[in-house]
Image 1 (cartoon, rainbow, N blue to C red):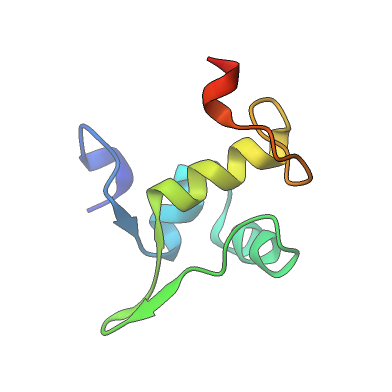
Image 2 (tube, rainbow, N blue to C red):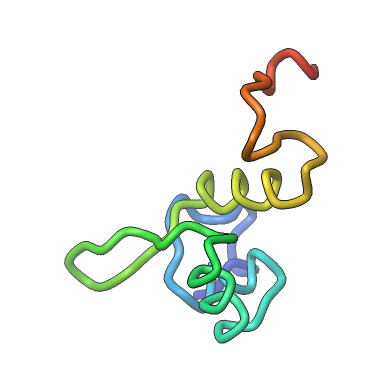
Amino acid sequence: MTVHDFAYPPFRMKLSEAARYCGLSPSSFLRAVENGEFPEGHTAKGGRFWLRSDLEKAMLDHTGNVMSRNSSHDFCQKI
């Protein structure tokens, strides 16, 4: 199954699903992980996976539109 097989993206995703969720190829996603743009993921029995919430936070931090890595600004203050 892929991210697009679900009505709502899964809580945790393997590499190909995480990359697609972020709009990247798996190799581009791994480069972004190495560059610190995305979290390194978690390892458990069955391999490495990424949490949807971690990916979303990284994408929001990266754009600077909602949160900034260097800011202590609380997201709730913007709502």
